[in-house]
Length: 189
Image (cartoon, rainbow, N blue to C red; front, top):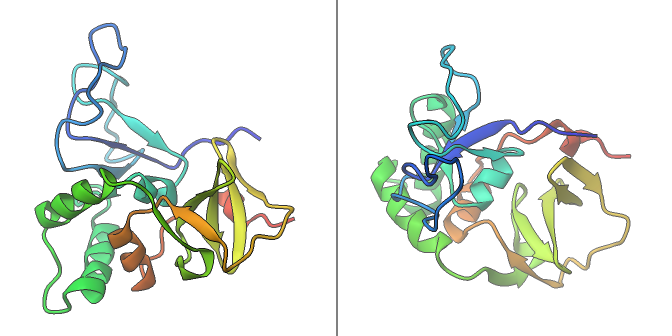
């Protein structure tokens, strides 16, 4: 199965040259956002004159990379994310985008945290055995560029894994935010 990613985003600007080849920079700013692919019939040339587009299988993938929902094209999701962030960190007020960006930027530059699988909330991406996995509804799904696959071997819930999803995003997931997942995450055969 060949999957089409559900989201796109950017890392604050242009990361490619006129030849459409990526340069050395991997970001231009702290605002790493996750956007809808289709929005208000806007048409863009990929790797054109503006920012460098990044495509994601789904929102769990984007969140694991340290991106947050866009407040322009995904306003309802961004507000839900900010509300869950507030429940997880400071119930007095939802954070503003620059505050989230500052915290996420520091976290995505840190090494993956080792934790027990059972301590990860649903929607988290983790690495084990050199492969990426999604924890979902007490199941473990293998992440691929084409979608999710069922994992045939049992994973020890008390086993150590590398949490790819940043700590604050995991707290947001624990506080009730539900990322939009690729349809293959629901195929469990």
